[in-house]
Length: 241
Figure 1 (cartoon, helix red, strand yellow):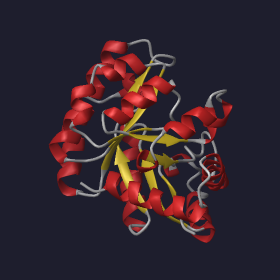
Figure 2: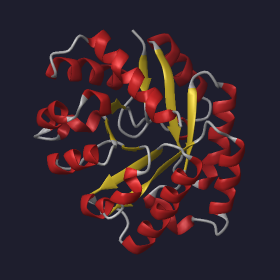
Figure 3: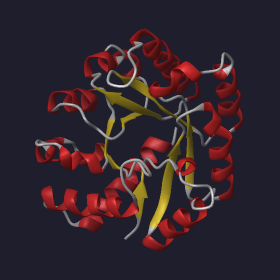
Figure 4: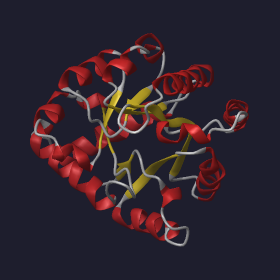
């Protein structure tokens, strides 16, 4: 079967190792990878990778909430220009993190701009949410008008259900199995709303994604090939306007 990694930071591997990671992904049966930015300095590297491996890598550009003190004044104009000329580019990684950044007002302001861009350009948006469930819900009206995914989901079962009610996707990374309620979360998400990811190189690797496919299928009593086909449908729906 074929696999998808919906969140892998290829630009954060050693530059000499990145082609090997991509080659390994192909050998293992991965046919699509979403590569999200963390900082504006990532953007060109990600665009270059997606141009070189256009059949495989889908770029996403944005500003991670951990690094907003480094944001240039012209970032919004720069990303708008890229979105105009690159219809395949998604938006993200962006969002709110109460553990790593105390400046919540700045995070909300920057996140709001990302949401505006997602609506204007009709792009999927990849959201980082840590200890911020109630803050993300402040944007529920904008989210209902946007294709979005909560990546590396770490929220409550109640938040998962509200994300689904807003029309969002839930992406599970290897860290889900550190949660005492991981089985409940996995069993609660509709099959049409799930994605899987490594969050490499920070959380895991490609083998971990394959393990997520297997464990998710087992917990949901699914044929893994049928589950893989459903994930491919979800991925296409999320990444296409």
